[in-house]
Image (cartoon, rainbow, N blue to C red; front, side, top):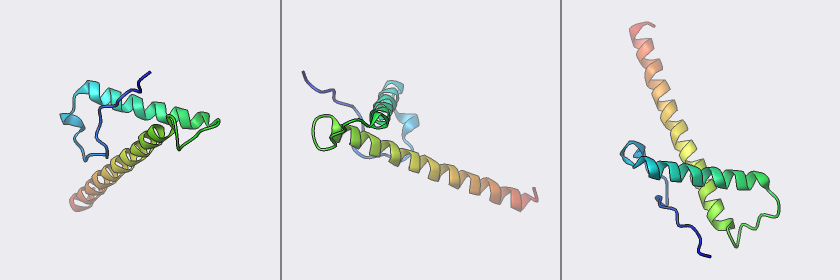
Length: 89
């Protein structure tokens, strides 16, 4: 049985979510969620063979995306805070 090939960038890409097809975004999110749940199960995980490397790659991809989004949110909040300080709000 062949393994599923996931259509996604090998590394996280900066804010191109709006340009991507919704089906691709859904497939990406489901792959990340599957990896997260697989890790949460935690029983006899072999990170070096079988599905382990692919799941680890997806998990690291998820962590990188969350870090990128958190950074973007921080920048937006700082911009809003500075704007409020400049207008006296």
